[in-house]
Length: 201
Figure 1 (spheres, rainbow, N blue to C red):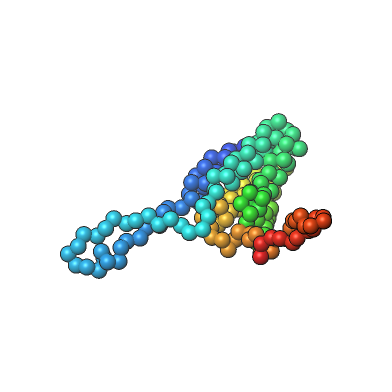
Figure 2 (figure 1 turned 60 degrees about the horizontal axis):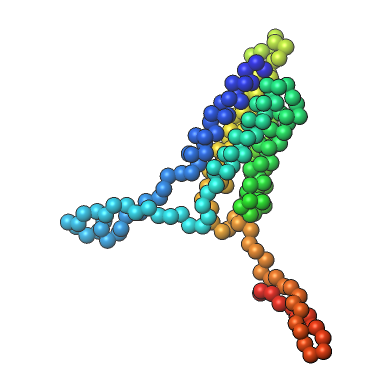
């Protein structure tokens, strides 16, 4: 348990690197004509703008940074409510950004929520099982391994979330507006007022 601060600090230090790495390198393309004609100088590769919607890894990074900060503060102050608030922000913050801010489909924010809740638990369980093999005589046997596994699972979920869902994406994972929208519009007529149905189809 005394080393848990090291693991929390490791997450805080890894988050910026993960955020920048998940942005990915730009894609290049070369003119086919320049590559086929002999005796010509190859053109410089042109940057291709990825189709669809731009990534928002930096927004996920800020949410995770806030979650880790609140959790570390709660651990240092020995405040369980504050620590659980940090864990809740870690688990729910990214799915909220996916769904409410960028209108991604349920498959995206649901996968993000599933990874962020199951990966840390699975990592903690595996770390605990591995740690108890070599510390049966200690009172805190297995807890250090569980903490390391929890951190490993959390970081794994963050990497996949950033790279898979927070990077550039197409319209297939964005919720579509309704195909039909109707409204009642008052229309003045001779001798009174009538209601007309209008909208888009």
